[in-house]
Image (cartoon, rainbow, N blue to C red):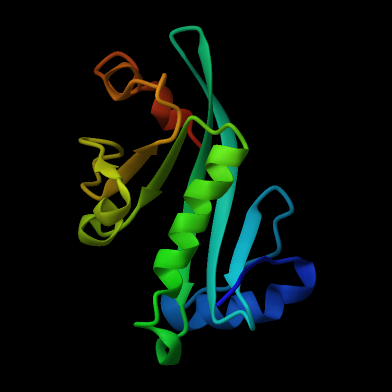
Length: 152
């Protein structure tokens, strides 16, 4: 089971996964990092972005569309991709990772719930940079900044 970086020529395989798991398809977006499992049976997209909070710029990445074809579920592919997202973020000096998903799954990897973000209860964050303090990033004053965050 090898994690590979997917390219535009993998779009058909990505869309098979997205169609089965989310009943959606996507255009290839060059600004995203696309990771998959060999033979493209599982997929995750990463959207890097920057936010400025209290005059400090933070490098972040949004995780979007973690999915595995149904016949390949239960083999650890999703876990492998999330671990690879964390590894990629560490290598690329990302301050934090944000996503929307099931807390039971993502908390195993160190993700914490973010209260009151977009009035959703399933927003999660993983702090990569230890200098990045959760309470400074998410408080009553800064939550409005997050309204300008890219949707993923």
